[in-house]
Amino acid sequence: MTYTIDEIESFSKINVSQTTLALAKIIHSASEKGPAKGTAHRIFRHLLIGKIALKKERTLFHIAAQHVLAAGKFDAQSLSDFIYAFGIAGDVLKLEDEKTTYGVLDILAYEVVTRFEILAPPQVFNILWAFANVKSPNSAFFEELADRVIELDQIKTYTYSARDISNMVWAYATRKAKHPRLFTEIADHMVKLYNVRTFTPRELSNVVWAFATVGESNAKLFEKVGDHVVGHANLNELLPQALSDIVWAYATVGESHKELFEKVADHIAMMDNSNEFSPQALSNLVWAYATAGELHPLLFKKVAEHIIGLDNLDSFDPQHLSNIPWAYATAGVSHPMLFEKVGDHIGMLHKLEKYSLHALSNLVWAYATANETHPKLFKKLANRAIKKHQEFASQDIANFLWAYAAAGQNDRKGLFKTLAPSVEAIIEECSTEHLAKIAWAYSVVKVDSPNISNHILNYVEKQNEFTSEELRQLHQWHLWREELNSDIRLPPSLRDKCGNAFT
Image (cartoon, rainbow, N blue to C red):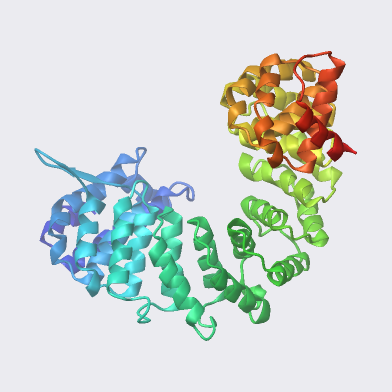
């Protein structure tokens, strides 16, 4: 190993790329936890990694220092392999001279863009994968590479296969690199195809997932993919993650396809078990059906029973766990045992630092909407909200207060008094929906805040924007103001609208 590193300066470019790639794979493998002492895995780990991760960087750093500035002499395959090696390593190495610090991948990105036409599609994907995998890739590279793809008309001229297209959009989505024109050209290309049978179900899943992840929607593309999956695809070819990704993508971009949702749900409901679904996949699955308004009781029942049967919920991260009760409440699916399990888990946590206020707001909103009580959970989340009350966004604080008022929890007045300054700080940012929720919540709990009440009156000019539900909530607030003999009340025009909505 030492000989290889010391002599690599004299290697040919092909040998350099192959050696670098081999070392990167060994280092990556040795970095993972492996068998006991004395095994080859542990020996390689000791030689290449040791007790400090810097050894990994030093090994590849030596190679990069010797050859990266001569990357222009690499042929296409060698350049692709060389870059792929640094992607496997997952690190952004930097070289320094007296004046400048160079990012290794920045230098190699220049070579890729300027010599792009010599690269075959698989080589392009390996390069994209590498840049998507590293911690701090060159964000401009993705834009420049997409520009070259369009400039050379490679999508329209069928340069890329179905697999190549799937891999390309996957890389852009993984990096969260947006390029609307590239995605538009890919969508138009796929829509014009007689059919999409050249794409495997997994590749189609990757495509719609990638479009949704970067916020690109194309109704004709999503319709074509959905029709194909419904009419032709064997869903047994799709892994659980792919099934979840497909419906998540349609729900995220707001593209409806009732038959697709029904087919996927029927397939999952008939599966022997749900053990192959990751916590994220389960969460995204029910979130997608709730968001899309596609109710499938058997699917929700299967997911709930699987979660209830788990020994614990430690494998769920806060966002995914909070989305599950939200999905059931939004879909109007009752499952008390599921809510109890989730509530018990969160209630027993020592700290809630990993839970955002948005996640906490979704949780209490879900329990209140589903009419599920869990005093320990509500008390714990209230304490967390009091500590972080200055960080609430308008939507989250409105939903949080509404939930505590609707759930009838004890000791609400202290929470509402503490949160009042935060409400005052953001109330002018509130939509009519959030304002009405806040007004209703304070009237139910009967905590008076003149400053909040005065801000509510500032929305009189928006009286034509209130929905019937919001007008009913304001009506209850107005009745409470009358009960207090307060001078802060709704003006006659808005008061009459509210009264009419209530009756």
